[in-house]
Length: 219
Image (tube, rainbow, N blue to C red; front, side, top):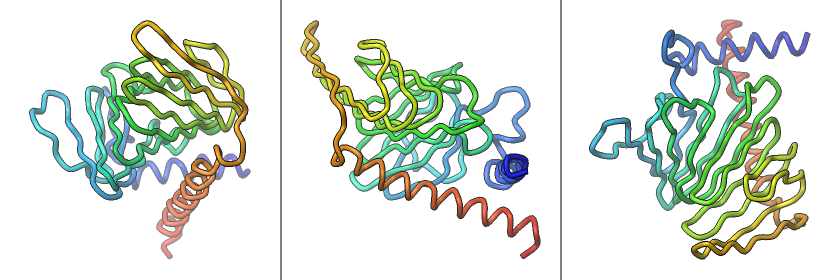
């Protein structure tokens, strides 16, 4: 019953908060913006200039999103809340054409959460690394010469080292053809960013479902 209720609420959430995503018939947007905090901009396919990123707007393949010093945004993939990412401040993300569950992290930090009901693997690419994940969560930091992956749910797969298990992190530095990387078990300090975002995301999600339930009940 709880699972059935969750499906109904997710469908209702989609219809009210993500109408573009729910009604698209032939070409589904790659992603939809859930919120925008601080400064964030989008460069849409074939556009010549960046414009302010807006809440509830759709992001088709070929779009780029960037955040400022104090900016961040949550972006939803799929029709419900099964796959969500948070692009942190001073970060840039690209959405490749033709792949609704693939993103390219140009720089900065990306939080990812995938829950029951998510469809297919989710892939995150950087200049030096490809990460594939099913369910669970992770944080990926990327720059021109370094990456860091922290895993907080089911194992993810990296093209460089293979499987990276829950509770572990991979850090690597790239200098031309030379790669210096290592896998270590995380300590409490390594989980503080995740715990803070995890609590915040579930508060946001619960508020969204509560608002939708009130609308359906006419409260």
